[in-house]
Image (spheres, rainbow, N blue to C red):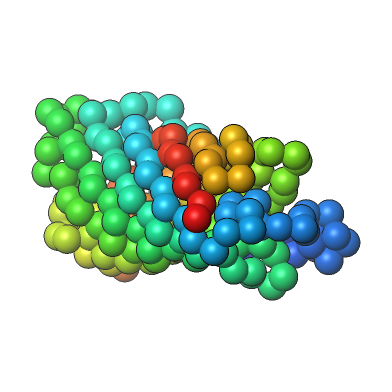
Length: 191
């Protein structure tokens, strides 16, 4: 419940800020003036679950993501809508989990909204839903929900880099819901 309240509070804050013209830039912070974006990201897994408190215990679990996005708005706030294909890769056991068992492909759709933009730096958050290829003892369902917080830097009109914190869970739709959490870096290309 606390997570839902936190998410709704952040969305509400962004809407209030947008109403006062605080965060509405003249162009989309994610894609600029372009209508398409490709992104690739790599992330390190953590075994603490959710984003708050921040994950602190790294594990031998990684994610690679390919993302295609288009600019949009969310209640007049600049946003991007994406389809993501990810692959998680686990190695040996650690902290009681058999990480190779979680080497699973995923596909999901997301919507990221811009929280702010200051010159070439922007921040965003997003949520999404999708599927993983198989159930496991960590996430007992194929259904996935994703939450992401990102901080980006536009190198120029076409290229940007992003630091992200990403969380996946099944939102308690199954008995097992130990979630996945990742810190990562990505690059975007607008065209």
